[in-house]
Image 1 (cartoon, rainbow over the protein chains, first blue to last red):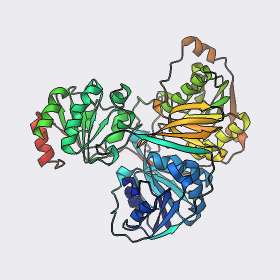
Image 2: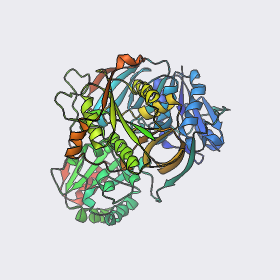
Image 3: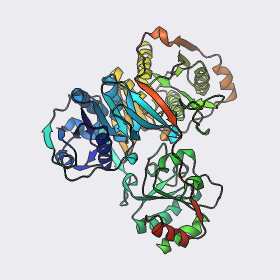
Length: 309
Length: 249
């Protein structure tokens, strides 16, 4: 039995999500291959070869894989899938894009966003925005799986010495073209990889008040996030959004400021190790998931927090 | 140009999902059901394309139990021209749904298929991608902006790193994200009119497809509950607990 992990990587470095996915693969068992696909990805392949537990890295380095377009990625995965019992990718927008496409081409179901490995064919996954967990057993000969990365620890990025081999990219379908990514301009740590996150909700009243959170974030080395209500109100850009329809994160510390705690938002942060809620409404549902609750006006509490740190 | 829009009937997102007594799924008895929110965005975008003159006809498709007719009537009230219901009482996996969708696409020959990026019940996020694979069409997932220029579409995608922009050849499958648009509400006169719009019902068995599920749900459980937290009185007490008790700062 050999398991394949599709690596997410950017600018020669493996994404943290890849290391978490590798841990899920190790829990399934068997040999572990990693596919690094993209253009100019030799450095990422070397990084993958150094990850503990990886036996072989396969590299498809081709201009047609720029931007990881789903059509070409799926064809590539299909071309090597017969070598594997399981194919895993992180359940990020990277993996979610091409994995179902590859699954359909192979005529197998995809098991989305697994949160636990029970056995080689049985997995646990959240449904209804994490309000229930389903234990599912797959009968497909090849199991295509996306992994909820916050539910698995990161594999060690060092200690491995896998072989690195080239694999041919599939022919360019020419059906789609990558134009570019407009990343939001911020020097701050990325939401999905931050160990501390401070988020603001509708209670922030205006985008002009977010610098207050940023100052606290700077002191803590934290990322800044937001609830959907704050994003919809135009306080901050979309990619700040934590929740079922935004980013699902599980930092060591999550500080929710002026966030009521809609089901939608809780789905994106309730796996955080420690949750702090600051809200003036003591009835707000966020307090039900908070380890530490502070019923206070955020406009008093946040500056005070900044001073105390 | 013709658009096919997929709509799924799901538990209303405002209703808390509860596991049923025999732990086989979610208790939907007498629960309030609604159109999957992401599908509402897909319907809205189709209507806007029609209002802009890009699209001539909008066909709404739902696959599910007889009551999915309500969801289709809602799509018709919003502005779809006609509807198709492929009726089945089984809970099908996205692969099977994609196969059914493909059969309807083969029949209807739309230039564009739009669906929500995921259904908020099973949270699979697969159907659009699978359908585009089966059709051998390009896909544009998680769209927050869509611009159609003749035989190509320019799509802005919401990705983890920010906003990605891609071009896809038409015909294409587009899966839509919440920020693509702000869905409208159906007016009462349109709700009345929708009752007379054509709705074609097909039995799943008549399509002659292999829609067997590949997965068995062994058990559905409540998520692990978090331990009850404590209320602190002051910011300094909070900072003290974070430093010395939780040891996270």
